[in-house]
Image (cartoon, rainbow, N blue to C red; front, side):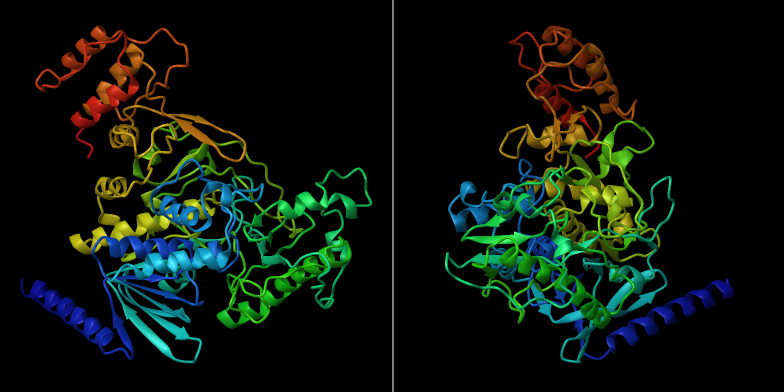
Length: 596
């Protein structure tokens, strides 16, 4: 008994000492949630946290919010055109309002959504500033942390003017471009290629220092000075007219420039083949070392600009002078496709994306908190040491909550491109709309953790999913049932619990998953769905019936099976019609399920 009291006293004294030490830190700012990094995920996380009535401080190194969406200039979004979930859909609607509708931003052929980076930044800043509980600070990057055991408590930031800042929070969200908080916090992580054939290889994807060109009109000459180490052969065969090898199949130069054309006669340069991709691994570098290393990537892009102006014959296309607040008129940051990746409670792999129902021991879709539909796509063309990769087709997919939670650090949620996925799977989860939604989910999770005094690993995922559904978020990527449909939430819930399955369809650059709400169900599917609802099975093993199928169970038989399955529960079912639709089954079983 005496020893127990001694240990209790020592524990309380240690807690008091740690708390006292943190509270006495110089230039200390206290908040409920801290978001480290104001990129695509970070700004969404901060906005959602504030909307959930929790104070949040966002700290970002650059003057802008939005990261790859804005500060890196990649303002041609990839994926989720038909899944305008949550804050992604809200942001896109604001772009529509600014430019005059969907057609006004479908200006290039790579995306349905293209916009000027400065406009995207202004919209995100307005969304952030509309939240009185959200404070964003700029010009700071993380350099140190304070922990108590495995619990992360505070972060120290270095400032661009030489000053320093400590921020203390109950929950901290890692939203940096390269996963810097993982290293500082001692979180377990990995980098590089990690396929089954190559368990670990340090190569990350190429980055790109983008540029935005402005059409200054015929007769204008905006040709820049020839960049240092310029080599026109680097850009040979970027388009047809400058390709001497007639066996190479490439688009003509006009089509190349239209690739990601922005409104107001502006053009994004973000081109992999013979373009401005550049291999550099900045992950282990310091902040100052990165800035210096990026100059070579900038030079590659300036070489492409000079090539377009001189070799391709477009001297009237020049760097836009009013897009970015930089002296060289280039974006504030490069486009990083890959960063550190945390070892999380769940590690999402290509197999999980390819067939989420295949392995009953990995029903990760049941923890879904964000959706994406982009195919597996990597950029390794500039690194001769990267091993060749081949990717299978995948359907649209969900990202589970466990990917955001580190396995060995508490008080930390991880977003952006640093979530727990394999290198291969990162090729799909890294795109802007998906990353934005991952950030929104983390913000909602952080708010719930603060309200319930939980660490992220203790959070009940169903409670987070309920909050996200209320925010018009897709959790299962059923593109044929939208938040405007009355049964959207019911169908999402039965999908999340495995009561009814969707049908995944790999499709070009916008993959699909269909629920088919108006189709009937087979007797086997209905019995299986009843068993899952009652907790007698983990997941329904039946796929939706094909269009035109006639082996659906008749309505009167379906009613009998449902009432036999739930004899003590009263519910009403429409008797009219030959078959009970999947939407009706979802409506009935969502109300009977105890999973939420």
